[in-house]
Length: 235
Image (cartoon, rainbow, N blue to C red; front, side, top):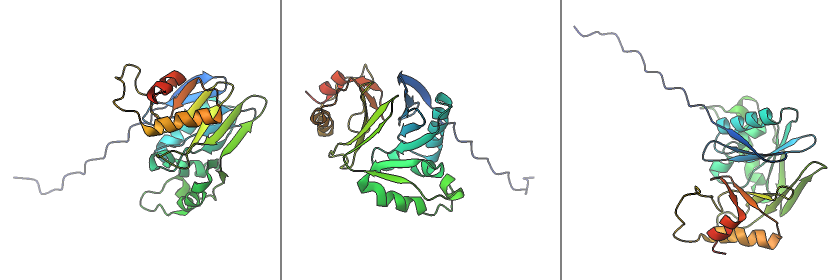
């Protein structure tokens, strides 16, 4: 006879661990990859700046943990947000919960302040469990972090993709960090069929700012050369 007892519920599989690969690409500069969205950490004398807390709480916290492992003696103080698209600000509440100062374009400040107080009752995140008033620093066109060990320059480059886009430039390493304006493809990928106008706008912005860039650390894709960017922009 068939059993009248209810079957036991099937347990949901545990979420996969978030992978973060850490590559030192210059003195005091770390490229944090391992997924579709990347981050960069820049070490200063007394603190660390992280560029991008993407996707989710889980991804952002994994990035922060990887940074702390790579630079164990210095606290993360700032988290730079490239722009306000959901996949690039998805971990911003995790950064707020940690007490890090969020650095973003001025047009985002009021929006991020609203994000900070939104209720998360169905699935409380870190900020919901440990509420904090966020520290948000607004950037208009330029912001510079510098001391006797490193320099990090933030610039606004307005493009069709986002009007308040921030890029990061490391003058000592001659590295540009950018999101979404050009996603460096795999080295053996066939050339693009058409030139993206946003990639052209990125290259024009670099030229206008007179930045001596040698490498591009894409927040998607990979580490690439400035010549690859020129080729992608048809220049």
